[in-house]
Length: 252
Picture (tube, one colour):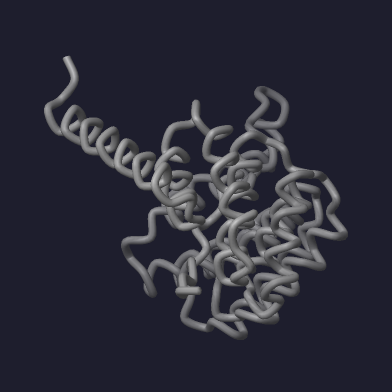
């Protein structure tokens, strides 16, 4: 039996969809298509419908702010459908509309990463970092990519640069601890985790990385190496989902 809250929400969503469709029947307005697409995107089975309404909205406006939001939405849908080349095209249009938005270059970098085009991904992560160096997510995303491909020294350089700019970041210290542990410097890794814990005692990843560090240290013991195989390098694949871009809505 479905909870009453879920049933009420479903009824509200159905009413909202019906109202938007009635409004569009009276006035084929781009904003109505955008709102309906946003509603439809919540259902993974209706992404094609959402894409259709965004394309209709795109044909009805020349407002750059609206086009930016529409192209981002189309890119997001393509990502959900694992159509990465298609997503890349939409995110590149977003960057062309507003090249000063770090999020646009980050989305491009993420897509190139998923396409295994690492050089292009690195270039675009760097663009995002240059525009918004206080956003630690950009540093951690680039370092993850390097770690996944065995480029530990490059990952360390990225995270060290991030810490020079964001010296109070517990999260960057934790990521750097994982990276230096991969290079075998367990003492430095422990120091970084201690520093991260002091800065943010509630940071869950510290406990996880301590466990990984202990596993890696134990793996180096000859007796262990001869008797059992412990997990190898811990991969931290960047999630395919993207952060929500701040939508700038201005009236035409």
